[in-house]
Length: 119
Length: 216
Image (tube, rainbow over all chains, first blue to last red; front, side, top):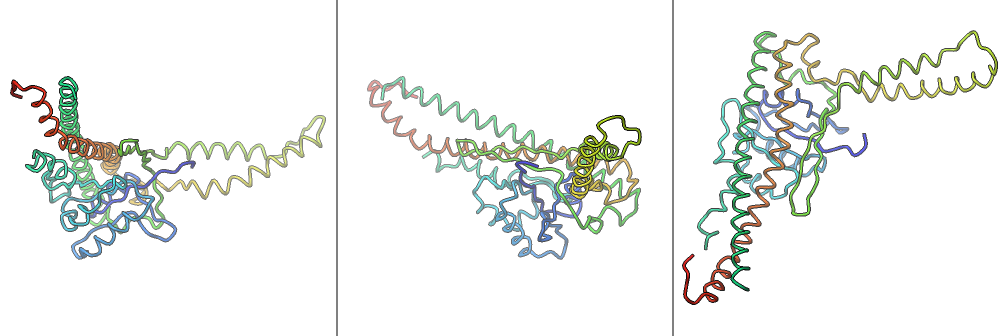
């Protein structure tokens, strides 16, 4: 296929990953590295952070989808990412509904109306 | 700077603010749609699991070879904005390839009752037949018919799992739109922030040019 596009990566709980993989985003590359991480109860925060950073470093990934409750665990890493590609999208999870006030992008946009901006 | 120019720049600032608000509103709408679609997807997965068995539709059933069916194309606009759009490998392509293969192999069959120019035509047919036989194995390995992720969970999967797949396909398309909107929102915010810094200077200039002091 000429001009192959980028991939969509996902970090989420089992049902979220299964759903998106059903949708057709999954890939196992030549080095057997997946573009998804199924976060279970025993998955450490370091592992999540490392996977997230490895997704950021890959130039074949265009969008990273991450459950908001997992994003909360590595908020500093998400806030530190300022580039537009790959885009980071926070999505709800089964047990944790989406909260716009926690979303990194919306918090940045909301920062527009802080007192400092009007000085 | 004349009064009209100052007014114009203020109007531009207002326009940008309104644009920013519109983008935020649109983002919120799309977010709500995305969230409800994901919920639908989960619900369908749960229904499928209920009918297939408790341990079905799990991460353990993912295939050992996974190839992406959808790609996202990114394009950077001049104003630091990025546009994301998804492209899906169509399932029809596989059936097209299969039909082409069949025709190709039929052409390769040698005909018995040949009139004239037998030698030349046969030579051509042989070469075309060879070409077809050379091409088809490569295509077969590229286009694995078992690429549909639904097949990982069984051959006769319940309708609810197909519904879940449909929901998540829609979610993926919507995710690309939201990613585009997010970069647009951040970009507009940055522009607005830069313009706001110049506002006090403009206000001072405006008050200097209007000594009578028409407030606001």
